[in-house]
Image 1: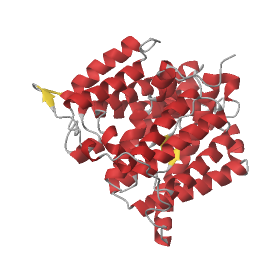
Image 2: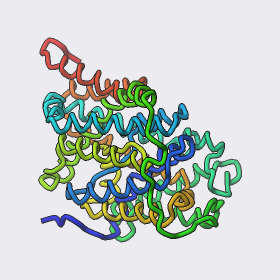
Image 3: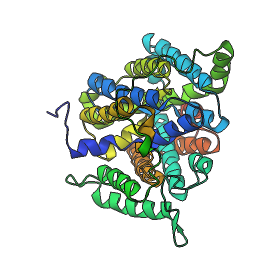
Length: 399
């Protein structure tokens, strides 16, 4: 029988697997929108810990991507983001507590779930490559491919591409190595590079102590904030959350962990995220969710038990409480191209879940959803995919 918790190198390596999704959006929300680093890192750490303790398996914790990406791109106010967290938390609480999500889940075909997973995986791979090329929004904002490294290129070749190539090769060599797990080697190697060749920005300002978050540090959102957040952030986020962070995530958790994942249901995933959001934004943090991509990342790099959640959760809690807002100085040590490596391999792992499909119609739905996602967004791909999948149940329609 598999233990509920393991604390070893593989679990620690797996716990680092989804930093490529978590850290860039967290940094963007801090630098652009003024969210509290202390609130973000503490809420992430606590959500990791409590999710692992309750569900008893590896559980991913991520920023809500639609809300975070749009808020960063348009430089929304912190109050508007806080309002979105309260609203999405209430929506998820109602959908979960009433059992509505279980009814919705019964009518989502398997091909749509796999379409969400392939589309999410593809988006992760694209973003990972952008990190290595230095073309993500965060890097453009900082006007540098590696803003916290003292080296921008080696000869004519950007340093991000070199780090990405070396790190990618190391990952391929070590993916199944239990003595030197790939995720741990790549992340710790990146931190070592940051210490040696980085700018070490903010390290001299670190003042260790007890730094507790403030209650509503950004103030209570106005009625206008709630109205704007509902229309611009929450409504576009809901389909993606239901498709990726509830249905695709819960199904993938069952695929990976079998009966050990019995607590990971559509209902419990909704309620878990609802409570996390209500708590996170209250201390200045960001809207949070689970996600199929995050689970694939943790699993691919070695996480197999809830021990991975406790280890990474404790790391984030220590960063928040011991260093407060200056915890950013530690995060800056990790080159962005290293995050790109994690995203690339996580995306590949998630995309390969479509290999269990059996007929042409299912593959058509999956590829159709991928096209819609790349042309518009994942929420649109999810909704259109449901319609196409049900249409193709008719025997008169062929692909």
